[in-house]
Length: 238
Image (cartoon, rainbow, N blue to C red; front, side):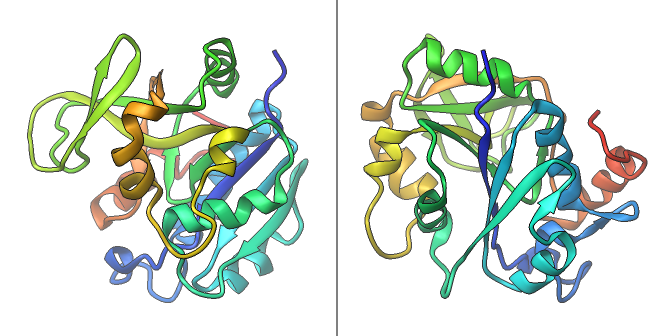
């Protein structure tokens, strides 16, 4: 099966938890090795055969555009610029105005997840799913919250705080057209808290188990881990 050629990368966060380590830059531009973290995320999409990416940007978006311009390797880059913070859901809704395919991937610009995008899309289309969520197994779910999974479907979301091993939402999705068109039409909202959690029983999100690693640079400790794991990677994937 051909890979969906379009992806949205959420790259508009303020990065307040990382500000002490990387001041005055949007999180995706935090340097890892000699390159912005976002370059490592884009490299994965190049390897998987994507053709275009919409960067959903806000805070200091000029820094992202100035570095990457309208293309990266063989990717066409477009920009969806928030004039005010819209939350993850509002950012996705705005960026969807620049995609045209039946399915679109959504990723976080401050998270690196090793996953087989082709297999994820194959699972999504074979199941005729409205939404597929990449899940990653971790030794302690306390920081993330956990997915409640039954029969390969997400049945619920456990709040942060409970400890122990489990499957977590890795923040990478495939969204079908019907779901995109059903998003709230205006205002700021959280895709996770205002769509996924209350509508999980209707959406019946398909689970795709990714093998990792999962690196979220939203906190300084994981940013340091990114330097160790990705710092030597140039133009490819792990």
